[in-house]
Length: 363
Image (cartoon, rainbow, N blue to C red; front, side, top):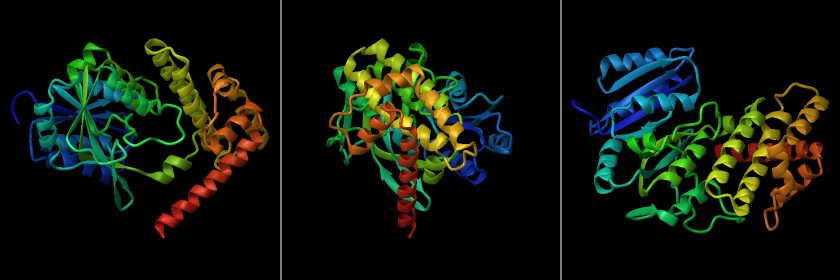
């Protein structure tokens, strides 16, 4: 391809299993339309990932590789955006892959809806050998949807859901991801919308809160083009000793967004409710995790200290769980009354139940 590309794919790379990395890069190289480039950002990966990216770049002109010291996925994405030559930017994780007509379909989408700042399409979840359809709506949507003005609140609702027990029909789900969409690069730069450096989890959500808020128009079509490789066991079981600090930073970022854009009690309650669930995950991935080898007394002490941190404490004391599911009301009760042994028992029970479901799926 000669000249300036229409789309730049930014691919952060760090400790990606080699077969998955090769498959992802090959899926880009086999696109049916060549109006794109790839910026693979080797984020100081200590293995052979950087070399594999260089090998692809030597063989294919569509790939550029940037090597940097490890700084995290947010910085890697920002470096890719800053160095992109395309008018539009797409993000792709190093272990994921694309349908071979992704660029062609996206190019037509841009032609049809080029006055938008963000274009959204759908994805697949690859769970083991199973490929599952995943849509951002609860049902198949025909045609093109446009979100602008007050209508963009539906997008914000998909990241900070209203306080309802169950999603209603046509409720957006998983809309916070940066995958399976294109962002106008000038829009990102002009509005200084960057991934938050140092944010290790759910950085996509913070990025999209600001992107949806600032965008003039957002368009959606039900094209499934992106394959998200999902490792359910790893995502739910891995011992993560720094999870509390990570999620506290996330809380600060989301709280800052609310205070700057819509400082209303109803939105603070949305955040409280969401983080009540996050606090349960902190117990699951750290304090009560079976791979945490500290003595039980020490783990309980650390949990108690973390729950007293100002934002967590505010969430626990002020979250209104009226009408919520029993599990949410139970978590609220246990945390509000500082019954941390009860939280240990609850998350252990949840882990046993989840493992049983996983075995049933595999059988």
